[in-house]
Length: 118
Image (cartoon, rainbow, N blue to C red; front, side, top):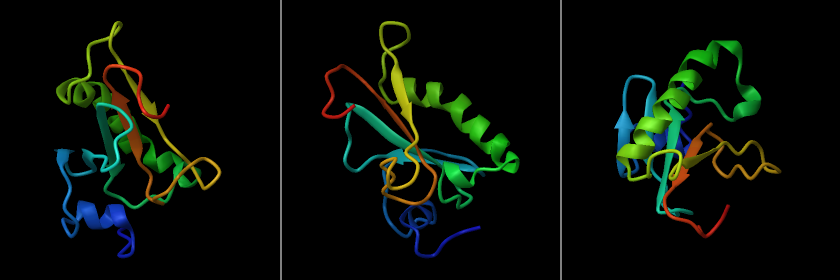
């Protein structure tokens, strides 16, 4: 499913430019345009899922793959290795949870602290 009015669906489709980090048949990852940390990228499923509130058991595979991929991409993008280094994984859900774009996305942030936010 694709939402023609969704910002992230447009980025996935190449209608809006992005600085791509990774892409496969189910996942697209790209740099955040307003980074909160030295390393800050987003991982999104290509399937339009509005938020974590709409996740069902059928989404477990792609979400599991995203979580398993995050450490590799974090290192490739410049995060320092665990345990001295590391990264943060954040999923905002709904307006009260700080979600601004209603397409499920995982923020991966890392690099030397302090960061602007978080």
